[in-house]
Length: 319
Ligand SMILES: N[C@H](CCC[C@H](N)C(=O)O)C(=O)O
Image 1 (cartoon, rainbow, N blue to C red):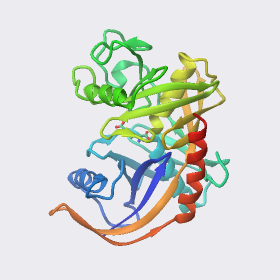
Image 2: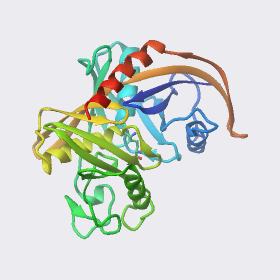
Image 3: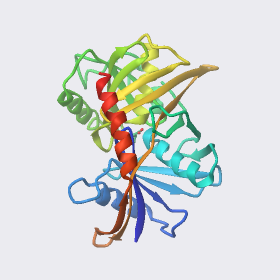
């Protein structure tokens, strides 16, 4: 039996499995198999990824994030907000730390971003513009506002790791199919992006307000990508005219978040602030030999779902 919470950050949805309170102790192969089996939107639960909450010797808890294609990511901003909420509600602490693949990150509950929406802030860091940090094979040590001919003759991109790998482009207008095509191409270019890449388009809405859509490594087009929105907010202060140290509203297809970009001693950090909505909890039985599953029981959190819809509708009205 596996118990989980189906949750989302800005419509980027996850299956949250707490390994600490259950004796799951999944093997690496089982984590891969669970991601493929359960994230499948046709005959699985349907999700952009799985968040495994585990014990940590360095922080209150540890988060491991697997994409729907079974690959593990260094970081997941929307997912970390969901884990932050889970740990904050469990401990009663307003602020804790969560161990992720590359860093122990500060997370906390903050003022609601919208009426009735419990809101959580997570630190998105370390940030690096060194192409080797993605990794990305390029003719220079950084790729800021540059053409990547293998991808597109039309757009310029900025590459950064937060710490998962991103390229972002500020565009006037675009077709979703274009973003998907560039995303597919970029994730089939091992000579340029050996570990794959998240690809985002940024549209300027207003001062300190942008719209971001992302083709996610290991998933495809999603409603939102927290690390991508954070990376995009940062780039919008570099190449665009948005300000550091002030909330940048990032609208996405699944809602909106605030990103506050700071720079201290030459190092950037982004505070990603937004919802962490629990949609339902469920217990399923899973046969990892047969790679099959079946529902045992579930409970939907209707009030949360209804309240979030109001934020989603508001976000849509902002673009
Ligand atoms: N697809 C991403 C991981 C999930 C990131 C995204 N869901 C977020 O909220 O940051 C990657 O492979 O780097």
